[in-house]
Image (tube, rainbow, N blue to C red; front, side, top):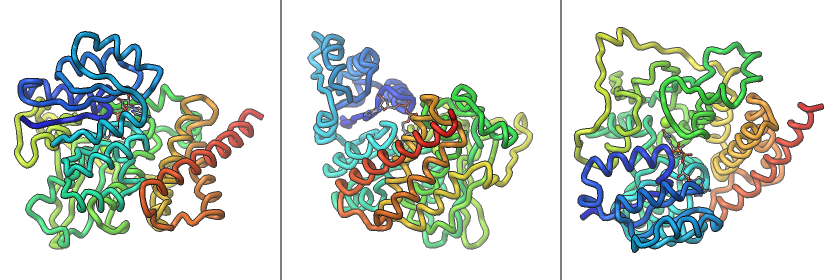
Length: 396
Ligand code: NAD
Ligand code: MG
């Protein structure tokens, strides 16, 4: 039986993965090693019981008593905290879903690669913060990383049977998020609720807001570079409001291979779960006659400073991705908390990168995970200072 684990089981990607695992036979078809979550221990325990997991892990120590109580009599072990997450990652499994949100997902996935596992990677932050380290670690241990982000799954599928050297360009599609048609002056005053009204995809809160600001696409541009090894100038972004083309690969003979499908993450997750085979998946089928047309437009740089910042990060490389992601996470926290405005998020990231590039060598290649985590820590402090300064100016 295939041994599987899931990090971030209680999130949006986690729930979709759980749905597919249950449809494909649940505990009768998979041996579940570890499931991890955050504060929603009731749901975590329910999933662990359904899949008869060996261990359930909550990221938070104070949630452990509740998790233990919810698992009483099940024989499933309960543990808590960052160290317990790493221990769960050290339990051998054949397939691991990496679906924690944010830089917190990096270390568990990295640990899991040591065991030569197949890592289904939804946590794009891993590649943004530590792409070269992660890819090298996978190669060293004969582990495989399969992309789960819909764009990267699309590109991966458009590359099957092709030579990466024949690739001329990669075109990442972007929905444009909830605020894509707002006038610029109004955009700066968008609220959290407004940024959460995504037109096409149902996702976790953080990535939904990142879609509206295009910080999500900025992360994905970097993710593309790190995963597929193409150069930054080979990566383009196009706004495609229907979100039916999930991305495209252009070859040197001018051919474009596009991947289309319903906007349902169970496609990309199911592809990674069943790879290299294709299984029946419960996703809606496209009716082209009913659709009538697909539309595209160029992203406006003034509207999406995150895309420019991603280009700067790719030019610097080294630890710039770790700093960029951490600053973005802090800026997002401050926006959600009401301290800064929507447009201030990019200003916080910009200020953080500027401050760090004066004092630190952002371009230095990390020697190990510790260097990445140290930069993550530093950038969070710096971004906190920038966010509070912008928030104070705003209130004053
Ligand atoms: P989510 O917020 O819905 O779920 C996040 C999961 O991580 C939960 O289980 C939560 O308990 C856990 N978690 C949160 N903080 C943690 C911490 N500090 N330590 C340990 N666990 C923690 O997020 P999501 O939308 O499912 O996204 C998960 C990842 O997948 C992100 O990296 C996101 O960018 C990526 N992704 C998501 C989608 C989507 O459709 N939701 C699509 C593409 C990529
Ligand atoms: Mg995506």
